Length: 69
Image (tube, rainbow, N blue to C red):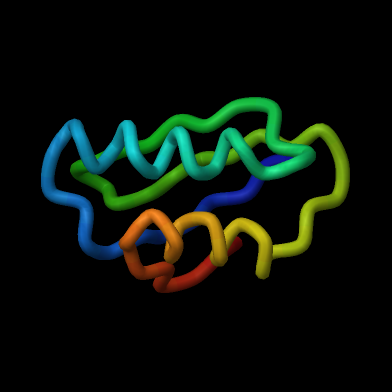
């Protein structure tokens, strides 16, 4: 299963790394690819992961989640 997380507040490669590290720590997340230009994190999941867990991880890293698909 895959989800796209639309994120505001990222401006550099450091931001990408910060978001990637935050999301990869969430239980059930297998892989993360963050597109700085598109402001999207593509998340590959090993199973069911609640959107609130993904949102919480991004927000704790200091960025805003616009939506999750």
